[in-house]
Image 1 (spheres, rainbow, N blue to C red):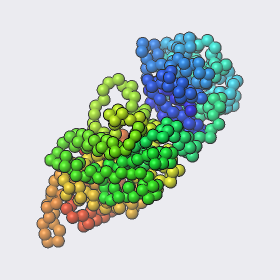
Image 2: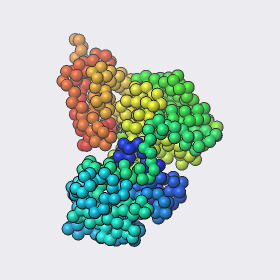
Image 3: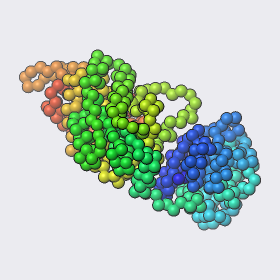
Image 4: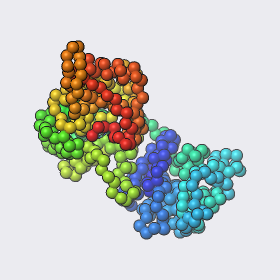
Length: 516
Ligand code: XMP
């Protein structure tokens, strides 16, 4: 493993990307979690200190554990990571006066081009190299044992190294696009650290299986399976590792899409012979939701019941000691807040967080090291059908948040049918994979219409389709008028109970993707 200690840089994820491109397996961990014990257990083959917004001169600013320097492995410090390293090892850092703060494009001139780290960096052996700088503070004196490999006008110590210990520290960001030759430095660094660059999804799968077996031993594991790609891949990986020691619980809250429960349970039972409990708790959930129309109240009820139900079924599995969760790598990063201030809750997102503490279970999180696209790749590797891998995200509270106002069985039934027609339209027009997420929301209003010679008084619905990279921001999808017209006609003709169709053209922000 290559360990990246995250000090809060905006571009830490890019470091990991670069390493994956080099087929090197790495893990990012927030500095708070990287203790001496953690380091000893992980036993990384190399360490990278990321950049970060703090100043090493501030008391209490982030530090790596000092044992990092005595592990005998190569270390690369970037920006704040360079300053930390110099500060820790006996150099000096100064606050940036305007004259020395540097933001943006800069050029590094070589002062020493020997050594494997710098190999191929100054391409013609003499010329300067473009880099991207973003720093206020700067190193004013390098630590004993270090020498300068390259300088820039604003950063005399732009590139420094202690060649005897394989410690490297650079002021600029080699991981960003604006340091065009930056990948070379990563390549040289991982070679120095002895990585052979043979990390592939197949290797990851084998490694994870080995680690899961090692962690779990002969104990029982439970897993909440929703049919979404993260939980599906987690379930399959565990199934492959420990077979019958795994039991998955599919909590059916009655807020799923048309035929969803059957499709998911059938796929896992038939293709994988996985122990799967289909917890049909529709009555419980819909009963408790009756008469509730406040969005947060609805979410809280569902979240609370989900935990109760999961616990109830988990209690029937004797000797369960572990809970498997499909936590991804961006989730791990997002769990550290560098802003220091409390952030505002827009929506209380529903997940199974808090479960392990409450149930006294230990966590198994095999996807902790992966990006979403890599999880999909692993899913393919495990033989998960494309229909599961490419699925649009579906929220934990399900159709509840697509049914603003009070939830009734009648509305849910209408919504399921309309949604199925809409998705069918999108698939037929070959648009499914272009869209991040598409769904119908049923509105809490009835409107007047005319069908045949009769008056109708039915529900209105809104179609939603957005493009997005991560769900944090989104834009509405620009369907053609023909598509919208055809879809509206089909929904009104095929779905009894709807007589008006609207298209939601709100972006996020200011809107959110879901209606509640
Ligand atoms: P919003 O509506 O907040 O949604 O713009 C952003 C993304 O998150 C999904 N979403 C949820 N997913 N539990 C989930 O697992 C939730 O409670 C939840 N609320 C929203 C939403 O579908 C979209 O992909």
